[in-house]
Length: 139
Ligand code: TYD
Image (cartoon, rainbow, N blue to C red):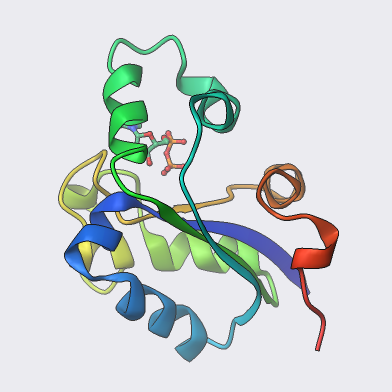
């Protein structure tokens, strides 16, 4: 079993795709172990997207990610990290296949509905970034 970090991004929040996104994860058998809504600070975004800081359009990503609060989820399931990345699809929504979350609900590269951790190392770091241990639930 693995846990992974999902962020439901501002495009999904503003277009009303949060329910459909969560429904798909639950229908695939993943359990919600943590859930919170939060406004992302500049500091947190610079840490979370450290690998993109040098890109010329980083300010645009930052401003998009702060345009509404996001919903952070800790999801658990077998091979959750790889299986959820498959369900989410590639970064560019216009290239994401039908049936994937980004392919069905996303708009472009930036407005792509969700963030999902891309490795076990990233998941561990990102879950800690968004959840204190008393905000994660085993049941
Ligand atoms: P990245 O970590 O490369 O992709 P993913 O979310 O699929 O793991 O990029 C993080 C986010 O930054 C991405 O979801 C949307 C935004 N982004 C852009 O807006 N334009 C780009 O060219 C890239 C690479 C990312």
